Length: 152
Image 1 (cartoon, helix red, strand yellow):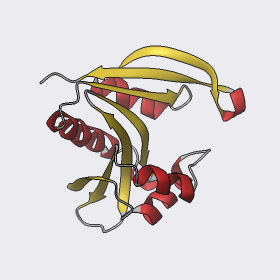
Image 2: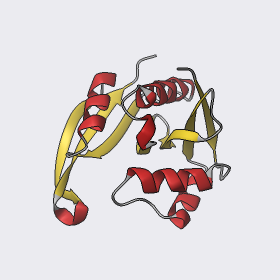
Image 3: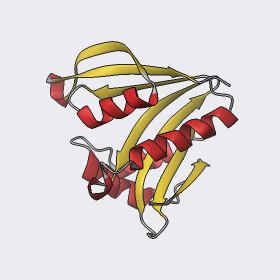
């Protein structure tokens, strides 16, 4: 399948679709107001992916850019588009964009229960840097911290 990926800073263009995607993807989704604040933050890079045959967003990421570092804040893929490589394409395109922005280190945290995300990050080359017990789900689930060094 072919995909179309786009990147933008400080953009509310896809707020409604991203809000819906959040609700479909997370047990504790960010609300519309929180997303509006984050999407309008000039430090945040919004990356969206669409199937070349669809108009709707099938995935997105939100990354805070603080050169030479970046923090991956959110990654979501529509439930019906999971397991077919959309997340891999999204993150690969994001990493290519980060290279152009002279980012050398990327950080993220993910729920220890999110096996597909853990597998994806490890496949891409992220390494585990820590564990925060009780970080998610009202203290019942830990967070795994990852980092990736991007070489020019």
